[in-house]
Length: 292
Ligand SMILES: Nc1ncnc2c1ncn2[C@@H]1O[C@H](COP(=O)(O)OP(=O)(O)O)[C@@H](O)[C@H]1O
Ligand SMILES: [Mg+2]
Image (cartoon, rainbow, N blue to C red; front, side, top):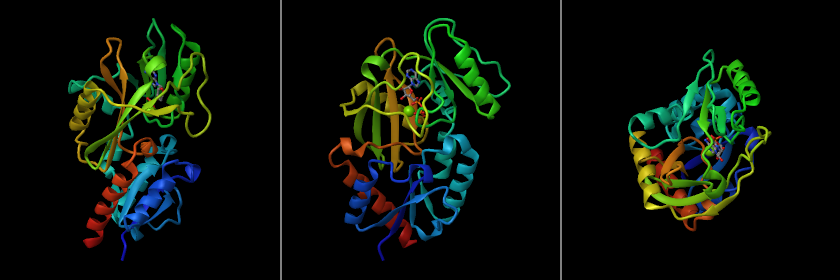
C-alpha cells in the first residue's frame, strides 16, 4: 500500500498554491498517494492519512484558536508536520521576543495586547500589524509621525482581541526586499528574494495575500548564520520545512523579520531540484508512520 499524504490547504486557498501541482506530481513519482485537503472542511477524514503536511492554510490568522483546535485533532489522529507544538508557538510572533532575548538579531518590535496603549515611534516610518498574521493582511506602513490610520488599525485589531505589533519600517526593504531562506528536512535548501510589499501611503491589502515580486537569490554567509541561529533557538533545526525571512538592518547586517514554521510558501519553483527533495522527505516521513 502506498503511504497517503494530505497537503493541508484552506477552502479559501483551494488551488491557489503555485507549488502544489509540481509537489503532487513529485509525490506521485516518489510513490506517495497525495491530495490537497482543506483544514476547514468538516468532512475531511484526517485519520485516513499517514501524514498531514501543512501547506496553504493561509486563512488561520483571523481564527487561530479554531486552527489550533484542528491541528490538535489532526495530531491525535495521525502525524502532523510541522508538529502541533511548533505550530502553536509559531503562529504568534511573540516568538520574536524569544529570539531577541537569546541574542539573535531581530527587527525591533513592540507588542501591545488588547487593553494596552499602543505607542508609535515619534520619528520615521513604522509598521503596524497583528502578532498573528499571514499574507501581509492588516499590515500598515505609516508616514513619519502619522497617528490616525495606524491607531485606527490598532484599535480594530484590539477590538478583535488581537495583539498589535509596532516596528520601525526597515528602509532597506525598498531597495533589496527580504531574503527567505528555506530548510527542507533539516538541511539548508534555497533562498528566494521577495520585493517590497508596502508602498508608502498604501492602505492595508484586501484579499488572502499581497502580490509578491520573487526571484532566486544566493544567501550571504551572514544571512545563513542568522537563519541557523534563529532555528537553533526555536528548536526548529530538524523540521520537515522551515523558512526564515531576513532583512538588512541600517548597518547592513541581517535581522529576522519572521520565522515561518507553519504554512510558508516554499517557492520551490525558484530552486531546481527542491520539489523532488521535498517530495522524497515527505515520502520518507509518511512511510515511517505507515510502518507503525
Ligand atoms: N518592519 C518592516 N519594515 C519593512 N517592511 C515590512 C516590515 N514589516 C512588514 N513589512 C513588509 O510587509 C510584509 C508582511 O509582513 P510580515 O511581517 O512578513 O508578515 P506576514 O506574516 O503577514 O508575512 C513583509 O513581507 C514586508 O514586505
Ligand atoms: Mg512575511
